[in-house]
Amino acid sequence: MSVDVHKETLEFQTEAKQLLQLMIHSLYSNKEIFLRELISNASDACDKLRFEALGDDALYEGDSELQVVVSFNKQAGTLTIRDNGIGMSRQEVIDNIGTIARSGTRQFFEKLSGDQAKDAQLIGQFGVGFYSAFIVAERVELTTRRAGLSAEHAVRWESSGEGSYTLEVAHKATRGTEITLHLRADERELLEDYRLRGIVRRYSDSIALPIMMAKQDAEGQAADGGLERIKLERINQASALWKRARNDISEQEYQDFYKHLSHDFEGPLVHTHAHVEGRQSYSSLFFLPSRAPFDLWDRDKRHGVKLYVRRVFIMDAAEELIPNYLRFVRGIIDSDDLPLNVSREILQHNRQIEVMRGSSVKKILDMIEDLAKNDAAKYRTFWEQCGKVLKEGVVEDMANQQRICQLLRFDSTHDSSGERVSLQDYIARMKPGQDKIYYISAETLAAARSSPHLEVFRKKDIEVLLMHDRVDEWMMGYLFEFDGKSLQSVAKGSLELGALDDQEEKQKFEQVADEFKGLVERIKTALGEQVKEVRVTHRLTDSPSCVVVGEHDMAINLQKLLKAAGQQVPEATPTLEINPHHPLVRNLKQLDDETRIRDWSQLLFDQALLSEGGQLQDPAAFVKRTNELLLALMLQGR
Image (cartoon, rainbow, N blue to C red):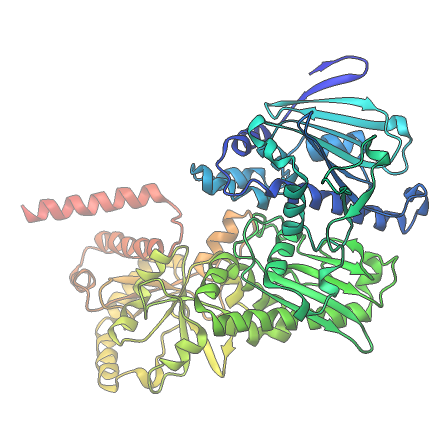
């Protein structure tokens, strides 16, 4: 870093350099979005000023008419966006402009595919709207002063997007931020009044803040003599879209407003818009995104639904309004009844908020249900993007648990094509006499499909749900029944198929179990405290053994996940089940060598544990034992 008295040059973070290069050199399908992003940032700055001024009216500095002004200079090749919002201090400029997407940079680069056109579409998800200016500009200047600071505390930031930026003290008589884009030669066609007005009306028409441009004379020219003496006129509707009647809003306006609100490049899958009047009056507008926000799995970061009071922005993502499991929703709630000086403490103990929250959750679930019922393709997209988060609602929202369960989708042994099924689908296909919904959980879909626990179910053509998301184990600890049918893990407890069991097969099994009592006792002796019990099973047809845990014990896969996360996990001693029809087990029954019986018993247990996703206490001993047994078999066969 080089420093002199007034000016310093600082380096962008490494990630910022990469992102700037991507933005400057990527092939954008629509370069006009840079103006939408800059105007959205200006609008946010004005919203923040309104909120802070609720407690300190002096921040307005005598000018409470907030607006954004767009101007251009053909001769200089510049485009300027100016606002009189909250502005930034020097440290805020370094934090917000010198650092890109602090919470999501790593995830951003992990998602890059190498396809510039596709990668460019990710940018809007990562809170980097300011940097979209470099799509069209070879150099960007930003001058800003935070409301409440004196004119000599302004800051000027400048960069050509090549890895560094300069920062210097400036003088700015008015609060707010002014951004000047020095356009590249091939982008100067943007410097036309009609062109800029068209872009603003297309992308930012519904922003609830006046966007101003110079008023044109009869020849289409702005009055001369400096920006201060030019007559300005509003070029957008500047009305809160969510306050307008639904019939007066076009689908395109909803799409554009969502993009402004979420900084997404793609439109939403669906939206719901409502005005509530009565004891409480408020408006709500909610959107389902067509792809997951980049930080969807960050449960501590909330920026989905904004709270307004009488069109005055109060806060981003008030968790009191929308539960955590709906954090993928984007939207606005605007109340006519809450006090303007509302705080988080007031929100936490406010009956009105509780009512709005309940009503909002109902509207959002209604919207998702309608999508599932009326547009299977879009619902499939929603589920692939956000379904894992919705599963959290099974635990977090007991009042709506059954509604949420109707929206869940699972992989299943019924269909290997990848088409997911609902719990209603499963129940509709249940065998006569079947009274349980069977499922298995595993670390991956492949592990679930190949689990030995499914063997008897395949033989009897009984459908089993395949759960392989990390959230599934946690969810199933709170989901015990659906539509009067209990849910049963096929890897827990003794397998009881009830009316699905063939009585003749059951009698034969009991006879075989008696025949193998001696072997069961010898294996239990060999394994000692590693197993809770050893028993003959009828759930296997191809595998020699499997392990199961007790009905109320923690599943082996969940134990593994929690241990990997560094948590203390109570040990649940598994039960080993052996398949009496497997040649390995039948031959083991004939052995008299106790050492060999101990080795084979340990091998059966270790194999079963591995197939369940468990971890061996001594992997090296397992390898050594396996090699010794294989060698013995080879020598025996000579």
